[in-house]
Length: 414
Image 1 (cartoon, rainbow, N blue to C red):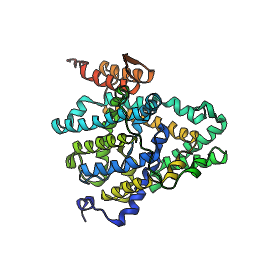
Image 2: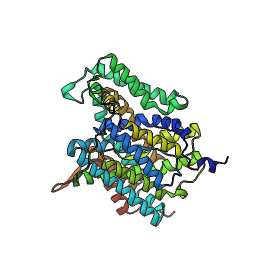
Image 3: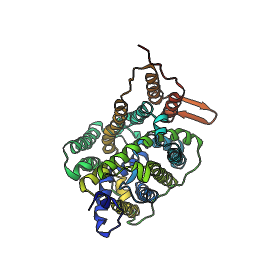
Image 4: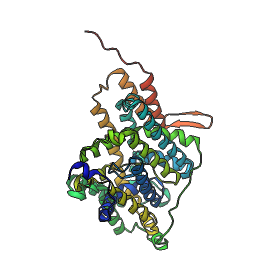
């Protein structure tokens, strides 16, 4: 059987277990985002499954990827939920999905090179770094048990739990083999949870009271212009990462997905999935590199396997006790994971700059990178009436504008 045959879409019952295994690989990261941001894990499972199915319809089942909760939006969702509630924040996330959709039509019209022109690494790199660093103080507070003044955990206890989760995640990512290497976050959560149980930090009351079968707690969006302008620019970074993810899975299967079904269609599928998730109160979707790694490990190039993963996620979304169990994970456990997670996102942004080969000391590049970082991390904000632009949103818009308006330095003639 040729590579092409292996990559054709097939929906076989015998692939159901393999599909469930793919969801297991994605599960830790999938539920981490809603737990950290105050969203509902069951809703995230439902929207991840539906989002993957939407993506498959748009791309005609040609790309074996699984879509689920995007880490890039953790910071803006966390801030948004505190300021405007879940419903208001969802309007901003819908706008982010629409950005993907508009980019897909721009690519269809002008070709993918236009994205590189508007969003070069000198813009996307520091924006990704801001996403990783802006909530780093929150990660430290969670890891040390002081994020909630009403329920402060002794610092020594919190650090023991968080470091157990962090250490396990690091060790599994470095030393794990086979499928184990693909689930470091899940392993870290499990070990941290066991240590938290030992210290009596877990309360199972909610699990006992929850029903086995329950409708996910969907939250429908409410228009909030502040949330829209705050979150919308965040779509810049994951939109660029989308290209890398599609290239990665193409490298594994031996197919050029940028040509067929075309990046304009994969981006459209991603955008529609994200907007759909936001309509129900779920986090934005993105392609999962962990699942891409599982495809490489298992050789499961048939996108029908991802259909089974999606259906399994949708079914689990209706298990009420699962969501209740996930809600019992103590704050220090998640704090330990976040210490590595936010640092890793920052490193992705740094690597984007390094791989670009740009001279960052050149005046134009230095100006763009420096201002994105300082404005984004330093807390700069601009207000006009009820409209406020700050944080990641301000950093993203500033970077795009500076890249478009600043003149390029002349090359000195020798």
